Image (cartoon, rainbow, N blue to C red):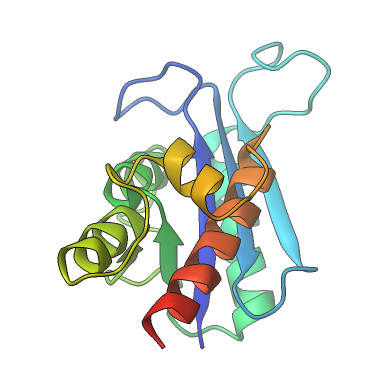
Length: 163
């Protein structure tokens, strides 16, 4: 499958802002190959190298092309719509209409939890990320990369639930 778990840490930024966000990505099939990018001006993240939007977009596109071979990849996340809004804003600030290799289709874990619960499954009652992590006994993420890994693990557990 060509699916990538994403994690976007917004650091208080509203949608449309990209200074001060962190983006983690990991292949659903190959978690050992991951990406962590911090976007912003120097000094936004203490002790961490940050990239301007153009370089961050280049790095994301290079990762997606290398790991997935230049085909469109489906992003997977809890509340993926919000994460995609940040990635679209980043693309625009990076001089693009959209990030190459990132599909217009996506998998939203929050919606999956709701659907499974509606049809008699037993994921978390409200579908919040915290409740989902607690239900499936997954460590609380500390950064964008660990968030993408947690989203990957949640997705795989949800797939087990519906099989």
